[in-house]
Image 1 (cartoon, rainbow, N blue to C red):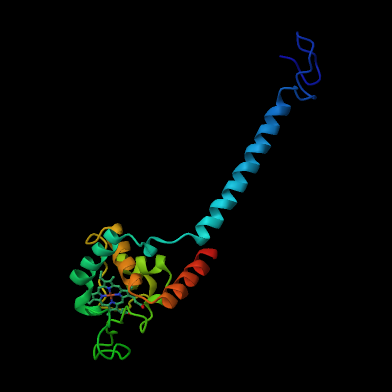
Image 2 (tube, protein in one colour):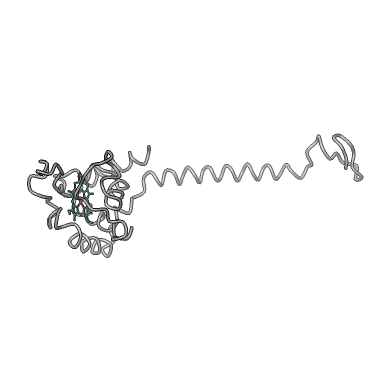
Length: 176
Ligand code: HEC
């Protein structure tokens, strides 16, 4: 075993001076890191601006979402997404009525990820401990794809300016 600074049998330095071979390797590595970071930056930019699954314009997804909505949500949120009457006033039991999903409600104030979480896990996941709500959690009842489809259906009913506001809320949420 040649010690530091000793010559090996071939007469080259084994330590101290880096073997020549490593220079292109380092160059390659640096190149790879550069490419990866540019790629990563590109991906990050893309992720910031890319549409969420809630922005689907696929007619099959929207049709599925419409069916899921009428079957699972319309009884409370209304067949026309109008919500329950007097939805801003608490019920005698202290709970809130179902809000509209049309632009007069506040569904569009929430980023897509949060809406998905509310439908999948219930509003309790976003409320103080002990919060009581009539909004069911759909985990185990609807697949993730069905939840995104129903959210895409809801968004597809909004006029362009409401969709635009929601896009902006989504972008801000992703930047955090
Ligand atoms: C049994 C009645 C009921 C059904 C069925 C129901 N919801 Fe709700 N939902 C509510 C109530 C009540 C609230 C208000 C919850 C609260 O703040 O306490 C709510 C709130 C929500 C919110 C939050 C809205 C906001 O602006 O904060 C979303 C999103 C939502 N529901 C989506 C759905 C979807 C999608 C379905 C069908 C898959 C559905 N709900 C089915 C009663 C219901």
